Image 1 (spheres, helix red, strand yellow):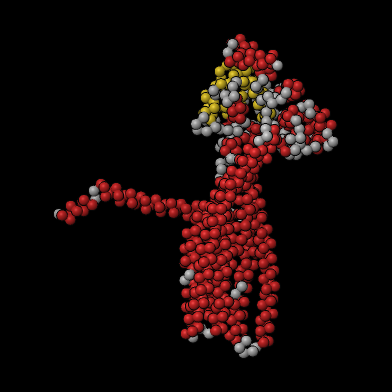
Image 2 (spheres, rainbow, N blue to C red):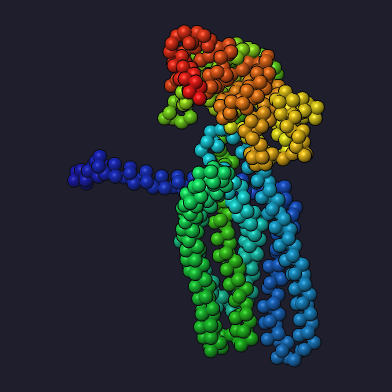
Length: 616
């Protein structure tokens, strides 16, 4: 009875909870280890796919590597043969023959080394190029939201620095592993033929080397990851500062930019210092163990020689041959450093490759031709989970009409413009084009029918012709010229020494604001879309330039459904309908005259601008 009571006490609630917690921790640890193993296998599988297009070159490289490892064993064998046989027996003819044979092998080794170094690096560069192409193609598919949260300089760092290290790992990694593995196995077999006990003593040092490597590898990996992050940050800072150099000079803020750069530069120095510290600890620890090998060989070998268990020739050959073991061990140590850099680079590469791309909704269909009717039904939208930009907004724009959006900054006007081409997903509600919900349409066919002219015009560092052709890449020269004429920019282009072949500079720096805007209008003329979005297209221009641009825009709007976001209300007086957007909702809607008659928000904005113009 006492035993039963004791057993029953063992199964009380507290003990059961303790046991359960222990089992949970045990199984959680096992699950985490299983997940880590799966992640490593998945990482390796994705890395290996880049070898497949180059497998012929890869196998040739590995074959050459095997022969290099085998040739490496010849010198110790010849050394032992000479010391124990040829020299004591004065067989000088065989000494010379062995020397010539060794020289011939070294010529072959030289050619194999050339093949491995040249074609191995070529293979690595080709793999790097494929990864870079994959990354660029994936970046082209990513949504606007990705670029809202990632700086250009950091993306560029991943495409250049990280991929370079991946390339080095792809080339040197398999070679180092194969040469080192073969050399270690062969050295063990060969040294065992000299003296098995002395060989086992030497190899007993290997666990210490593995233990030190394992202990320091994790620390080194984190240090190199931090270093990568700091390089990306300094690249982002540099890209921002160089792009904004004109603003910096205009405001005499060079000292501020230097200060910002130095902050990133110091972070880089600190991160690299930590990385080199971890690398130094890794190298010094492992080098110490390998140095112990030489001490062990001298002491243990000397004792065996003293006892007569080994002769002088074998002892001398053993000392020479021990480098055949130490060298691949050191190569593996160096490989661990390269491995950490390559793996961290590949993980950062996968961070981008695993970002969710834009994709059509399942079952989405092409819409060959759009008439232009647009309707928002109770649309709510937010750029993140905290700040809602549109709140149950509904509006309808008939085809061929000009619809204007006005209101205070941050009210949601630009968001409406971004939602029509489906640049962002909506939170709730529906958006229709010609009665078809835009999520049921393919992104390509939808955007093909929409033209956008924005306040901030982006021009590529190419010729004027190439920038206009961006509207429709298959357009003829005559169509490009016609589009430029309709945008009132042709005469200016012809006044340039190289005409349409004139370069515009980075972001169109060689052109004025009005000229850049007219080029963007020519681009849309060439595209000839049924729906046109003008997002404050003239707000950054002076009055004279605005009049010229407005003439081009008025012609561009003819026969198209046009959505205009305007800061200057004088430019949208003739719109078919105007909506005042405030706090994500339509506060007022009507024609210019109707809104003035309401004496509300629009009337107040118009009166304010009218007084401001009078004051000028």
